Image 1 (cartoon, rainbow, N blue to C red):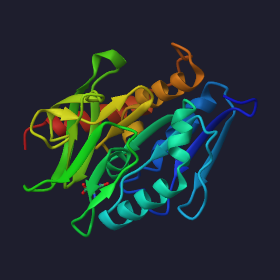
Image 2 (cartoon, rainbow, N blue to C red):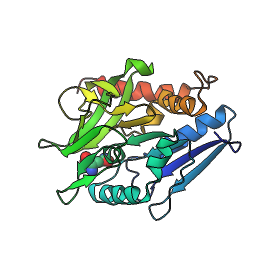
Image 3 (cartoon, protein in one colour):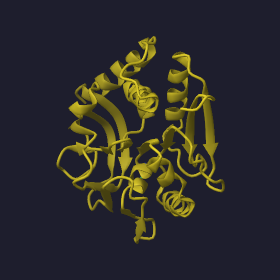
Length: 242
Ligand code: GLN
């Protein structure tokens, strides 16, 4: 972190920001400020160069065509890979998650190259689109409470040996492979299919990103009443009988 504070980068709001994913940037920013940190947030449009000196990069979901364009521009830019080489943290959602992998199937039915920042590969699912609420147990290495989110994707994501599942689903499809995995992570790079926005529904993940950026094990507590109310409501709605 620089003297100017925590540098937060929201990638391509003009292409990737479905289902309120921009809320993820708001939540990280707010929770960092509540801890007395200065935050410098940069929203980088797809015609701008990505800074390589950010601490935390957030990337959201998107429809198939914007996803292809975003992947092409991010590959050409090269800044996100350089930032990760410098130790930056990346949190990605849905289309953004697929872009971080090796490749995905684009809107033209062709393979698009991803950034290779996560050892995952996405294909297009043959079955019905995965839509609905998801509940899952987050990887015990991360020490976080139950994951809650909302998914809407056709893509299916397979994990390679260098990525761990972010969670194991109790409800919903997650990666869509039928093996009960949801999302992936390796070192400082995270991917999930969860919208919601997911960090409003799981503020502990936002805190994890901040802790990694600060290289600390704990943060001062903040008032989580509203987050807990939202979590409780969403978990109850997901589990109540139809
Ligand atoms: N286009 C991708 C898919 O359907 C991602 C969708 C999204 O980001 N919601 O798999």
